[in-house]
Image (tube, rainbow, N blue to C red; front, side, top):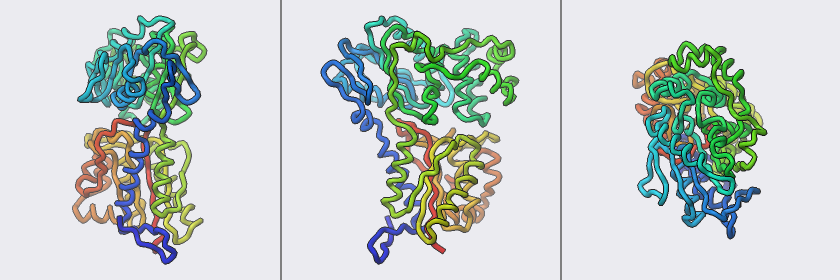
Length: 450
């Protein structure tokens, strides 16, 4: 990487290589949050017990395992490695089935961002497995992001798969943050909002999860199939009504909302959670800290812009730029960087390809036009919206390059087609599917150059 040296010998990153630096840092983030390494570090089998941070569970009898989410295959394989294959039975519900399958495991290739037949089949198989367990048995749940679509069974048998797909389509395109979307999902589901734990009672339960939600909302990971639900039916109805979603819902689900006949989820203190333990293996904070460390090694003065960034992508970009300007003022003529985590919201307004990260970068690119600045935003799962890319990177010349090619940024934003915009420029980030998901990472770089 082309980074020139000051007379003092310290690294000074240059704008000329700014986009390459941003790409390098994001790849460093992906390496730093490697799930297998995290599990091997944080989970230890000692004699007949599994230790997970401050939690310990007995392994007198081989446990049963239910793995759900984008990282389900990798989590199951690593747990099997840690336990030396001593697993009684297992289920993996994931977007792709690994080439090497574990003994005594059943695999379901479920759909994302919309459920498919295996999403329902996997949920039914999990319910059947856990519902026959007794109080002396242990079930280990491996939960990761994406589980809300990948793992589903409606409470109401009249709700078809087609209805579920349309329900999820309305939710993921409406512009609400993930925690509000999942409140709605929980209350129509037979496996979300603690209902899988309810089915597993009275077995002992250990949930090991990778968080793709705000750190203070763990029950929103995969819509919390094994955790008590703090949200209520009143919250659910109010969200649907306030955001005018009810007329857009499929008839079978719309009727439940209009008639207020949904069923409440199990709450904190419910007996079904009495023998349950929960351990977070990875979260967005670790990805953000990895980005900060990588940027400091590249010679930047770097800060993490902490806050609640589950808001409209334009609002977040504007706030981030204010914070970047403040950082520049504190360190004039020095290369500075701002790291931001979370997941912005981005309402779908067209039929193009892209996602919240590429829309964010496209909007931000106009804000930094003609400046020696670089912005990157990408998802740690390797997928942004309905595109094959994880995100995009832009610099101060991105918009002028685009216009020279006849690309109108406003049209691409209106058509929700940010992927096509950045693909034409060669500025997409194509990490491939990572098998992990700890939300998004955004980088803002200012090179202190006049």
